[in-house]
Image 1 (spheres, rainbow, N blue to C red):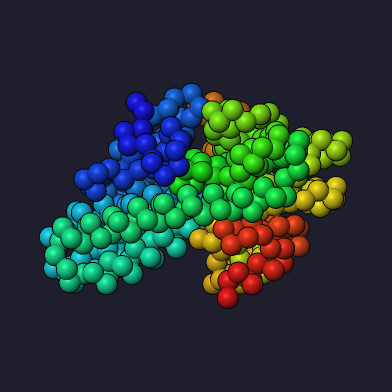
Image 2: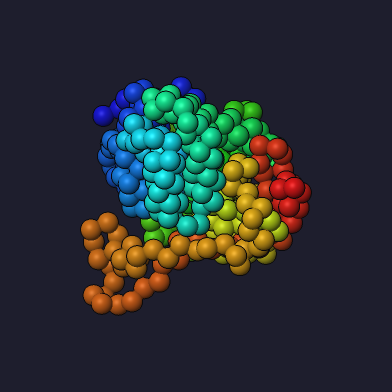
Length: 355
Ligand code: MRU
């Protein structure tokens, strides 16, 4: 099935999430099935939204923030007939369920908080109107993310030389955002500026976002991409085959430390060792002034089965224990440029964007 309502915002022929016209359901692209199957699932409640976020139907920091904002609209739809007190209580409960779905990406709490503040403000207005106001706000949040990624793409593209080979880790593309991409937004903007650009995509164990998702969306866009396994990055850096590294972020702390997909820290260390620029692309919604430094960022621990299995296939001895932190923290000093819609700053200067 093609996306029922392709996002007019991104121009892409697919979309990780869309609120349907009646504001009583959303569709999500089932990212766990990509690249083999392109399928959309329908979500009707905040609880279903939280389950979809937790189980990675939708993933990527900005995308789960947008999905959760739409989840708040669905919650309002269900309790639209409640009195003001009941409405606020119901929306507060929905917000808690949504925020608890995944802990590291701050965009989730950021988006839900904004929707809850608005819900409290309009609680006295009639039921149907409440839903419309919240739906408008959620769609605006979605639209703003696309605009932010397009803007940061232009700022980031300045740091991509013509003919560059760009290494990226995980998927920080259209699938992970409102429809344009943060790290891959920089790649797209460089290409649109007429530069020749080629991407090496880390496969990104254990969930394979690089092999499955980054490769899929870049190929769809006609951008030259090759997959490498995570352990190959040092080899290609040492041989001078990588010009610049560009990744996304799940949370940037006040001191500029960056949480991103597990494996990013190792890539940053190697880029530093080989004197290659390490760019972190993040809309302002990923910057978290309330978290002082990387040590204070909650790191999601996911199921060890995601490490011992690939899809349905077990690849490790039965009963073996495995670890699965979903994210790691790259110290600000390794971030050559933090690129947001406001421009690019040195990683250690991230705090200047958060005052
Ligand atoms: O576990 P995921 O797939 O949600 O992790 C995604 C990442 O780490 C991305 O790099 C990050 O969210 C930036 S997305 C623009």
